[in-house]
Every structure is written in structure tokens, then in C-alpha cells.
Image 1: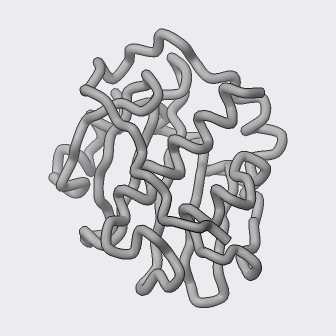
Image 2: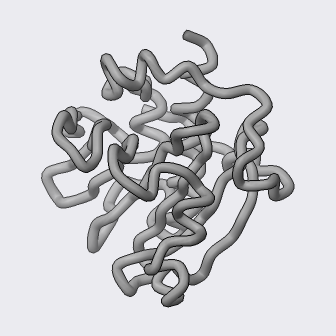
Length: 175
């Protein structure tokens, strides 16, 4: 579908974890999170072509959001945690972080919002990005799966997750 690989996400300098100068309006995320990636964006971050990618809305605690999945097991998720940690500060102070379970851990920013790129599940193959969307709420993004066929980010999962976060944030800012 895409004529060339997508450009990397534009990340910026780290910001204080609780600094949210331009918070996101999360109403669209709350009502229809699966609409926050266009077909082209699904091709850019999940699988190209995106014909067999299915979107599943997550509507039960502890996480609300959407997962885009392929039959071969690629799973890209955008979520809004309902329980602690709900902010980057809580994530940074969590027992898992203190036990070095999120290493490597990189603080950055995406679209002017504080963000953290980290790994979990004892694997640097999987990657997560958490973005402080409002003063009280972060959004989390991840791509998991053993192999990522037809994925531009198979060798740079954190790059793919950052690209997904950038796309969702951009779409929330447009609404």
C-alpha cells in the first residue's frame, strides 16, 4: 500500500515527566480508540498491506484502548491505563521500574509531550512507549509478537511504537 517506508517519528528532547503544556483531548480515545489510526497509518506501523489487520477495542479494566492484530501474531496496542501507573511519574516510581524491569529506559518527547521508551517482559524485542497526554493520564503504546512480517519496524520495534504514538497523538490533536 505504501510506496516507500515511513519516516521515523520525530522525537524531541526529554521533558519533565509531569509537564503537559498542550494536553490532549482524550474524548475520541475514550469513545472510538480504533479509529485513531488511518488505513495508511496501520500499514506504516502494523503490516503493509493492512488488508488482514483487525482492530479490537479493549473496554475492560485495567486497560482501555485498541489492539491492531494480524493473523500471524503481530499485536500493536494503544491503551489508556485505568489503574496505577496512570502517569509517567507513577511509572517512573513503580516497583517494576525500581527493580530495573523496564530497561533500557529512555526519556524523550513526542509532539511536545513527555514520553518514555522502555522494554518489559524481560525482552528487548518488545517495546513500549508511554506518553503523558494530560496532567492525570498517560497513554501507552506497544508492539509485540515473535516475528513481524510485512512490518517496516521488525528490526526497530521502538521506532515503530514511537511512530504509532506520533500518529495517534496527531489524530487526537486534529479532533
